[in-house]
Length: 347
Image (cartoon, rainbow, N blue to C red):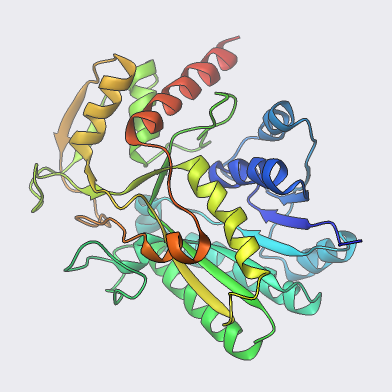
């Protein structure tokens, strides 16, 4: 009998982590173990996952920067067959104001988990990377072979460092299968409306700022600059539905266990391949929700890249993955989630 998959998800209560747990359960029917210390996530996330999937996911509340604690976790959870590592701080503005927090947490936690994988002979490791590794680039769209420019923020630099760490682990541990997934801009929420982006701290990402403004939790959306060299002067991003991103992790795990992954390290962009400006995203939300947003133009924000969107060819060819949901569905689902979560908080 084949061994039942047992996947460890770090940052399992987070936005992408929680959606990925749902995909792992529904698509692979595997056992999932989570690690999350709720630094920027909600303990009730696991109740929501259970409502959607019918399964209770056990979570270890611990600091992943503690090597002894991480080794103890791997000792207690026998039979882990793969790791998906999300756990990291991700706010670009916060990383600019508090770089030490980002360098310590994002890099140290990656090292402890990788080292535990080596010691416990866990061969598959999926790393949550980011399109921020590219920095400001001259040619669009960006492929995985596009040379990296200097990172525009400490957050982006931690992802560049993380990928370099993976390169070195792949060289010294060729028996491992390491995959870095470079997300573009995950947005939206699960189709049930029961789970979505719920940052504990004030969000810096555009879509939760939009939905919080629409529901009345924020007074306005500030567009950070309209003097970029883009079609309407605002930054351009490649928005991709979070459930599509989650599905890509299942595809990556399958790829890492198959014969088609012939090297120790593979890197994939996860996006739609379409660039959308900030003003276009606001207009798309207004169209999907029927809500007119109060927004204004503010100054540029330090750390922001002018424009970036992906070449998705490699993921489509090798992972057999392609984003399925469009911008309207991203905005519609995010709005449904905001309404449901706000009603739950009010009740």
